[in-house]
Amino acid sequence: MKLGYVIYYVESVEATIAFYENAFGFSRKFVHESGEYGELATGETTLSFASLNMAEMNGIGFTGRAKDFKSAEMEIGLVTSDVLAAHKKAVSAGATEVKEPTQKPWGQTVSYVRDPNGFLIEICSPIG
Image (tube, rainbow, N blue to C red; front, top):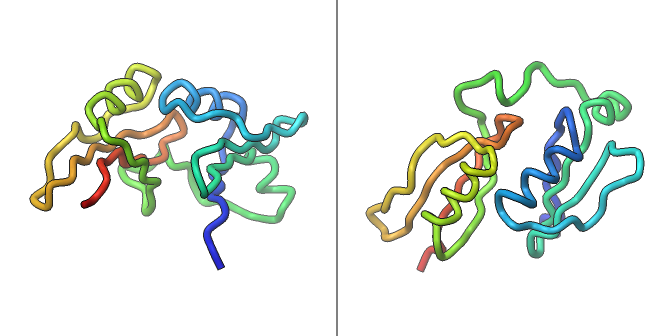
């Protein structure tokens, strides 16, 4: 078994796809003509977005939106060799800064931002 994709449920699939393209340089892998679902090419694991309407159609309920919470119980981690540049680019593209790039005791550089939906994103350097 392997992790094939992660799906975030969002109000606007198109706006979210556009944000991730601009903020992180990912490219569209697929966006359904209905606008209810889309995928980004991010490496081996696909980052996907589905509309809140699709969640309802699938019988999945949510009690709140990520942007309504101070911190979410999950995050996605994006790995780059230049955390500072990636962090600045994300913020200039509309991400909200949570924590500026910081060097960890084990040598990794890590920062945190939130996308326009409120989802937490860790931007980090490779370990080792």
